[in-house]
Amino acid sequence: MHPLPTLNYDILHLLMSFSSKREVCNMMATCKTLHREGAKFLLHDVILQDERDIRSFTQFIAADPYRRIRYWRTLKLTCGSVNPDTALLLRVLLEFAAPFLGLKYLRLHEPDNLLGSDLALIQAFSRIPHISMLRFSAPGALLFDLLQRMSGCVHTAILDCERSGAVHPLEESNPILALRALRNTLVEISGYGVKANTTSDLCAGVVFPHVRKLRLETSDAIDSAEYARAFPNLAVLYFSCRYSIHGGIDEEERAELSVHRERNRTLLRERGGWSLLESYNGSPIDLWALGLDATVERLRLFMGPMHDGQQTIVSGVFEELMRDIRVKHIHLDVWMSRAVHDTLTALSRTCRELHHLGLYVVFNPKELLTDVTAMLDALVEYAGCGSLQSLDVSLQCMDIIPLPLEDDAEMSPVTLSPGECVRILDLDTLAARIHSRAPSLRNISLDLWIQSEEVQTLRRGDEIPSPEQWEWA
Image (cartoon, helix red, strand yellow):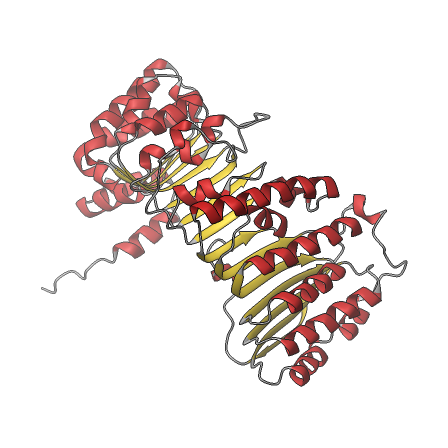
């Protein structure tokens, strides 16, 4: 008798993914293998949206607790406040499971509503010994109390305060303060809408020695030296504040930020700070205000549509930023052809040792033809005056200028037709011009899109990694 072939459990789980939970439960009643693998599949991604889900889940675990707790990998709780009996069920389950539980992902949405249903849940959650990724949406005071009680191993923490509905984030949302109890195990931190510019005596001396990636999205500029002290081994930094959102800045705001920048620069020189980063991401204004003097492997910047006056300020800020840092690889997301021209002009004055330049350009077909041609001329000129080894350009022509800008921006009364765009932006012609100015540039990637449709593409040399392959691109 031939032995039964070995069952591929990955394929089995794939087949289960096309079935409803009820169908998977029915499969589990047919044999021991499906009873085991069905439980593994169902416990791979646990989402509890209401009290009924919590009661059903606790019953499922109770049917074979010691095995099923070990299969349990994720928990997403979005149920909000629950009645005391349901809260007690969840608490007892967590208290029983904690010694055996190792979650890959724990997410609590509006956690204060759930924790307020039974304050003992704070202690129950804090006893989970290992969580690969922790995410809290709309955290409040009870959640920050929970964070201070946690003593397990957490690798990644995400604080999302943007959905809290509060006008101002809580002081406790400062990631240095909020996550200090987990400082010895964390390797990656993200904070959205956090109160990152505040400092506290409780933050003094707190160091996260293993954090390599930090993402901060906040409403104000921050104390760079304080963060450099707290995260001394950082490799990847993404920072944005309100200036990224507005897309521009006026002279008064620039003067205010300039004072903050000089204070950052002085403190970083006195105390020391990040001198080497693998990846640096944000808007020119945000990164300029940090005041870093560093060597950067990969830089990615975003410049949205803005008024002419704002564009002049941002171009000046960008040039100062590029004088402060040494960088080998740059990817720029730039809206409007004049902004591209100004950016490339600033690069030609500050950064001629660049190895890779990536440009994602979005411009309006109503922009002046002279601005569009000047943008292409600047691109060709920069390619010829630097030491580029690779060039990746994506040209996107579409109606993108917001209404508030259309009244003030200098626009042509005539909109370029798709055919005219292709003629003016012809990639073969552009590639030939670049080659004539930079014959040693072998790796080139060019794309042309008209109204979200790709109409032309050109590739020469080796494949160029996309910015999506960069950290937090």
